Amino acid sequence: MRRKSYQTTIYIGLNDAETGVQNFDSSKYISTLKYVCRNYNIGFSFQEISGGYFHEDGRYTEENGLMLKLIDVPKKTINEIAKDICVFFNQESVMVTTSPTSVIFIQEKI
Image (cartoon, rainbow, N blue to C red; front, side, top):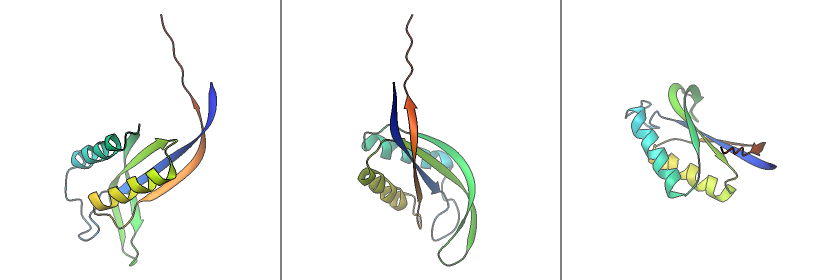
C-alpha cells in the first residue's frame, strides 16, 4: 500500500565550529548519531558525505559530513534532534530539508 509521507534530511558537518577541523574519527560521530536516533526511538538511515560550507563570518570550509534521513518524524522531534546534534558535534548549524515522498513496504514470504 502506498501512502503520502515526508522525508527529512539533516546535513551534519564534522568539522568543529571553533577550530575548523574534525576532532574525531568519523566512526565516533556515527556512533553518536546512532545513539541519538535510538534514544528518540526513530528509524533512520545515514550516509557519509563530503561538502563545503560558508560560515556566518564568511569563512569557507570543506569537510566530511553525515546525511541523516528520517521518514514521517514530527517536526518538533526533528528540531530537537537537530539541536542535539549541533551541541554534541559542536556545529555552528545543521541544515534540515523536508520533502514529500512516497513510501511502499514490500513483503514476501515463502
